[in-house]
Length: 295
Image (cartoon, rainbow, N blue to C red; front, side, top):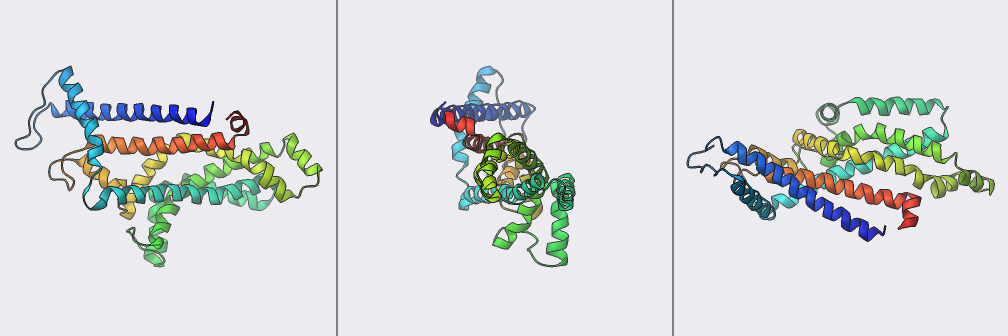
């Protein structure tokens, strides 16, 4: 299947999933509001399937209008969250790929076992515990980084490290397994037999297919990564999507952004997860030699 056909199918599927997500959220809000008014003067929605369908349609058409938050809040929130989540993925890969490669090549070296224990320890620590620990040592005790905020490059470091730490262990293990399998392939043996230096064998022939296993790990991990991102944003008081989701989920006329918008909160969460999965799937098709030849 050509890449543009595949991309078209994926975008169509994403649109259908987003419509379904908003419909389910609107369904929850609709039936929860049937219990009675939540504030003085609030109208009670009418009963019936037609009223429900009309309400869902109105909410889905209102989603694009809800992006017009005052003072560029939406742009700031999306930018901050994207920097945090993709920065954490880049940082985790920057540590895990060399570590997993080293463990696959030197599988009996003592340093490999030290790295494995360290990554598994970081993997077992919840992100909020890691965030609190980083704040205590590097912000409160040693004053190397700010405690909260998102107004300087230094303020990006601790949240990114806290979000990336849990993925390093998983990525390193997947990278080690992938590299170990690739190094046993015949074309690697032939490349070494031709006299290529080891670094050329690893970078030109072994690295790309080895990363495929690591990329596939992020498919089911995307939703958990977004969930951990929201927790990290709360702890470090980052003006990301949590700022908007707080107003949407807590709701009410008295919120800073107007009416309750649970649908927008669900929409943004689902959109972030779908975009991550789309990038992961496109990366997999590019890195996998078989799908790359078919395209």
